[in-house]
Length: 393
Ligand SMILES: Cc1cc2nc3c(=O)[nH]c(=O)nc-3n(C[C@H](O)[C@H](O)[C@H](O)COP(=O)(O)OP(=O)(O)OC[C@H]3O[C@@H](n4cnc5c(N)ncnc54)[C@H](O)[C@@H]3O)c2cc1C
Image (cartoon, rainbow, N blue to C red):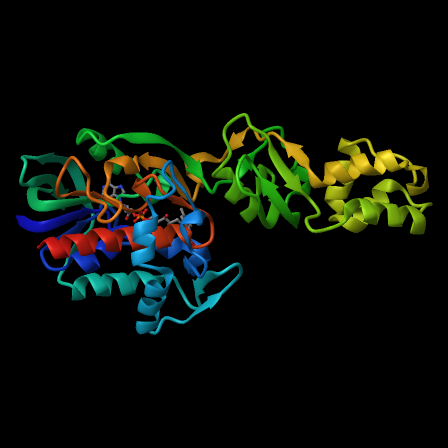
């Protein structure tokens, strides 16, 4: 069976690419349904883009690589598509756009777009191997017990990263890229909760508060959630993508607050109250209790010297913690690293050394922050490859 283009992976990037590559395109996936990650994303409402998406919201060895695709297919282009399908949406916070109803609307829209463009979907198909003879790619497949060799002029790797293997994530794109000699950067889990196996935060499980956090990268002012396994919530997921094993993380528990000023004022107004009681005025009670024990905070407010209050203010604004690890690919929203952008054209996503081979989406070493940026990369990179293929044809 011959095709113009075969796309491996019917996820966000693969379907977007198919919708633009057009007729003669086949999208293959081993899953029962296309776009499974879209379906479960954003708590079932899909945070499909971000109003403020720009290259600064992405992590990559080459921070310039994502600029071309992001600027040619922007969040406004995707919003226009969503609007055209009458899918109602709202901004939740920080420019994050979600469907009003269900993420399934986004999946249905992409399927409809790719079908309207003349592309086809083949699900529940195992990819047994890929080869290339200079002009043609051969993809060995098995579908419903039948083995078939499919051929195409163009092959697009869109099978995503390793995050959430239970949902069908595999390292196939990396394996095929490697087979074709494309360089790979080490992969690791991103947008993932931190773990503390000693269970120190178990008693605080469910406590949430706004913080400002960092880990060898930009600081994120978002919520922190303490869990029985460790630390989660948007702020922790964001900094996990910058965190390296063994490194500390810093948390400002009272961002935007003049903590020393407040403590000194409380010394005046609540001099007879215990320091740990006053800490409970500033932080959730359970966390205040935990920190009071952890930091051995003793005495009444009136007993506290300026130096003691300065030290406490510093601790509260620079809480230094060393996570043991992360929950890994089991729960990570993304995979960092992957196919080195050096090997690809930033305009078309085509491999420089293998004409006709394209890599898009999460498989590429471009990883977005939490907040709709990863889908925007999938749409933009998928569009770039799809458009380049269509123009070539
Ligand atoms: C729980 C969760 C929630 C998320 N929420 C958001 C969000 O709200 N906003 C956001 O921007 N990002 C979110 N993300 C990240 C986002 O889902 C991904 O970045 C995005 O889907 C990547 O698109 P992709 O097309 O590259 O890969 P995917 O969408 O993962 O698609 C890859 C496709 O390839 C198929 N595949 C994989 N291996 C094989 C194989 N060996 N053979 C055949 N087929 C294969 C898979 O079945 C899948 O259909 C979330 C991720 C997770 C895990």
